[in-house]
Image (tube, rainbow, N blue to C red; front, top):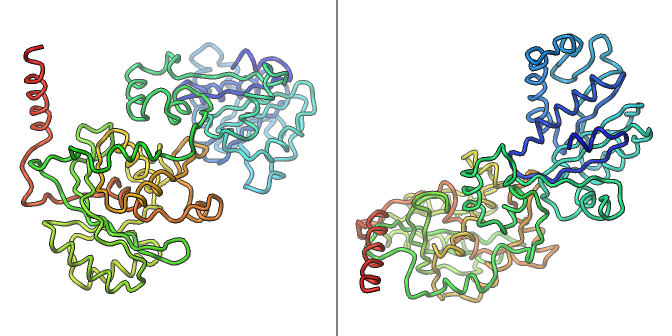
Length: 468
């Protein structure tokens, strides 16, 4: 990256995985440009200004201090590092580094920067609107002007992607396209790589390709799951939860609410364990029954039915999506005296930091975790409403935002852009995998712990291969 950028007129684009040092590299390049070229201007941009200040700007203080300890104290005294601008002492107005961005639809906010020595550094470039690059490129009028882009390759379209394809030197363009694979980085441990392979679902999963290998994923499908994946765990011979191990009961309700929802669905599930595939005892679930599946808008009648079902299950926890009319439905259950109600607003962000870094909101988190459970065989389904289950579960469109976080297409866009109706049944299944979907153990269920389950599996394997 450094070797590419030192060339006058450089156009450098870096597609990078986790932890390769590009953020620190940005700050080094900016300080190099500031201190080497008289009256130089450096603009650092990103889709969000906070990205620059939380990332690159924090590095300036450390590198500035390093000038003292690394034998360049005479340079240190000329550089002023402030919260909004880094500049040469006495030349704050014409010799500087600044952070600048533009709201969506207003790329002209980036206009106005021209200098003989102008550098534009764009972080998280995959999320920057193409119009912004048009304005920034228009400022590159001098042969010495340089531009550097870096990002996780979260979008398979847009200007950043094209700098690695048709605009790259390999294809006759002017952009040096570099790929920083975390697997090759001395800054990234082998333990981290192995953990991400497990967390993201293998080297060829789209999330791993983006966040570790720094590759633009070639999506074979735009949906989380295929019909065949789901069919494998419909009415299997063995359920995910053994009859003699402890489990909890969920009644999960998605309420019909107008244009984009046509059914109220209530799903009874047995659940055990917590968390995702990284956790020692990840969430497992069995769909036992779907006792509510109606397009009736008589919520009082449906609420009465839900109350009866919950009352007939030991220590049942009732999860209700309180978006839209779900708020009123939850109030009806409360008036009926239904205990253990969890109100779900899955447009909210997650609580754990590691989940916030992976998912835009709780809807994305539980949808992806439910899909992982299907792939891992940690969930089974009844054959009831099988067609609806397959139709809905195999048509959940996803994409990644500019930070490489999972995002599920909104229900409005699913309806208007893809012609996909609201997946009410599938939504109830996904809610069982919410971060805060806690359960109370069914009093009649066995006391068969996860350790006992592992021990029993080992004993069965020893017996199976005793004579081998």
